[in-house]
Every structure is written in structure tokens, then in C-alpha cells.
Length: 108
Image 1: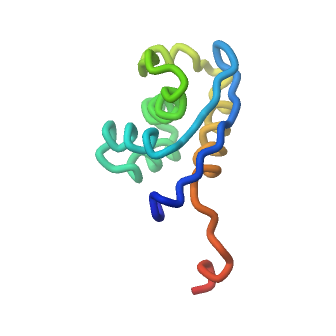
Image 2: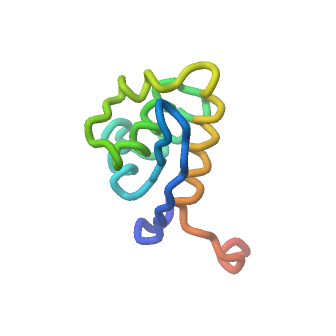
């Protein structure tokens, strides 16, 4: 995942039960690691379309602004009509959190 000191945080708005903001900082990644034991397993599960992984990722990205959120409460915010929007927002938020790879690093 790169160097943890390079994790950048940016709030990504998402409309659920109300406007909320996804943020994938060190705490969010630690929460995912707690659930999956390995952050890469969480990413792979979401890419495969695992509903549990999507819910866990969404929860980890939202819990920063509401510590009372549970996985179940977050699961109630997602339905077939918004699941693609949710997945896109999660992907964007994670992408924004990752360190930028500089062209010299890509070519080495």
C-alpha cells in the first residue's frame, strides 16, 4: 500500500440517508485491517463485488464523522439504486488517499 506517512486525507461527499463524507485516513485503514486482518484482502473482496466488503469499506470511510455508526446502520443506507454510486465514491476516496506516484518511481 505504500508508505503510511504518505496517506493523504480528502473528504469525498456521498449522498446516503443524508450527505456524508468518506475519508480514508490511517484510522479507516486500521479499521479495515481489524476486520480483514490484511488491507489487501479487503480491497480484493470489494473488487470481486463482495457485499460485506462494500459495507465494511463504506463504514470505515464514514465512521470518522459519526462514531455511533455500525456496519448494520451503514448497510441500511445502501440499496440497489445507489450501490454503484457507493462503490464509485469508495473507489474515489481510496484513490484520493493513496500517495501520488511520481513519474521517476513509475519508470524505475
